[in-house]
Length: 89
Image 1 (cartoon, rainbow, N blue to C red):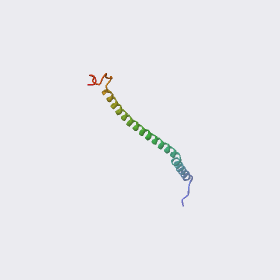
Image 2 (tube, rainbow, N blue to C red):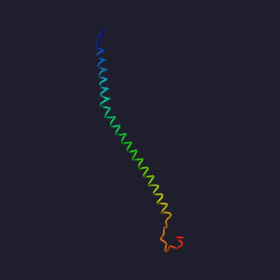
Image 3 (spheres, rainbow, N blue to C red):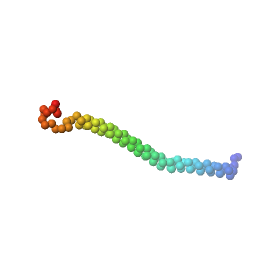
Image 4 (cartoon, rainbow, N blue to C red):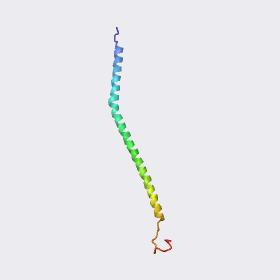
């Protein structure tokens, strides 16, 4: 029959210890790290969405600014004395 020697007992003990440490690290220590990384990813995605929204708002504001500036440039810069004055015609 098979008999355990001290070397085999030591190796089996080390193997069980490694399995226990690996299980502990995987299911307990890494879960906190994984959750914090997922939260950081969500925060970065929200920041990117906010940046995209701000960029879209900036483009809209620039377009409105150009439109208002064009309107301003086409308006009269002085108040005419009469409606039939040469500035109006």
